[in-house]
Image (cartoon, rainbow, N blue to C red):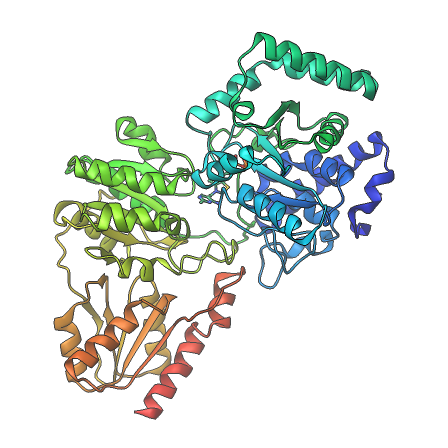
Length: 609
Ligand SMILES: Cc1ncc(C[n+]2csc(CCOP(=O)(O)OP(=O)(O)O)c2C)c(N)n1
């Protein structure tokens, strides 16, 4: 069949097993070819092809709700629900989202992007169905790493105790998070999985026995297992556990999904998949390089990622201060692989557990250990309470590396790093910084560990920075003040981070006598510099690639009100809106935060002055 003709998953129902396998082959080939062109989650999607086909074969979406944890592994679901024609726009501006999207399809019933929420969503649907007298099933697909997330455990606890509700939880176990899964839960799954003989025997019976005999056999097996073997954690929590099941055997998947549907209590279906299946490099990748791939680019990009630059500088800092790194599951994206291998005793990957990581950091800091806690800006939101209550309230000296700060582009609304400045601003004792360039980043890192005693944030964006790894890192003393990057009298422009480059371009393009100030210490503000700037009487323009509310601009306005300054002001930032996925430069343009947009804002400001 032609994949491009698929409009709706109903066509699957009449297909023979043989045809379903052919379909899986065609989808996998399509994904392997298409994803590298647009960028996207390669390995996770290559692993879920048969599972998603079997789900749509057995259940009736959207009456039956499919909930995908994170939502990064659901490309086959997008294809079966009629979206293949838009795959060349995947993650592009105005194109198909890389995640589940309410706006795209009625079959998309749970958006997240952040890990661990699917089981809560499942419970939400079960309760909503009860309220609305609806009968649909709710099925959550959650990875072996995401299920170890605290929020997933909270829902697992609740659902297991529900007597009159039945949810189906599918654990998609590929032994991998982005890198290898960590912790005791992963070990437990390995133990169940390592009874490979069980898997092999299951597979054999499923391919040769008729259905009624399979049912009889599984009842006998359960009886024998209950007799001989300790129950596993899921059974202890009140679930019926079915598994391990080969997640690439469509016949077996269909049989077991139908079985799950016929059981009265909540079910955990433990399926074993191969991340990256069908793509030799992705399948053999134990590090996580193929979890997400970037769009193929014709131009060689210069520089190094900010993440790599920071981890490299932190390695150099070890000669001055031994620091411990607590990493919640982002070793690869955060570029800490080399650090982890070099300083094995100073590094722990704690899994997808940002809240835990922050509380643990507070405790280590209280013990006097210098801790570096790298968090993507968007995932730092998860740890709001621990950062506020356990770190800032007690004024613990933890240094945060807030990665992917600002607009992240293709990952979209769930991943934009726009809220951390506001979030950290309201936290007492917190010091917030953002370097303009690599040199300033190294100096701030040094300052953060060697001179600060308060909780300290260094934010840095996605993307590249000019940096040569071969030149030994220099750490220079830095004062907690703003700097003047360019002198000028007609206007003062204030920003932080690489956005300052954009202001320089604006100055050049408009040919105006503007001062440009690097507010590298976002909190606390440099009051001396603000007095100097305000006293000139010149208008002020503040640019922040961050949410407006609670950002630097409101602090400057408060400062001016406190001190009776009446300079005209204007700003560019992200104000009370959701920023979708797309190319970075397209998004800046849409937000009127590119050179042209800023120029217009400044012209209006100067006209009004
Ligand atoms: C709260 C949060 N932290 C980190 C991430 C980044 N992240 C996206 S997918 C992923 C790994 C998920 O692994 P698993 O659940 O096993 O699914 P798989 O990709 O292996 O199918 C991580 C850490 C996230 N989405 N949400």
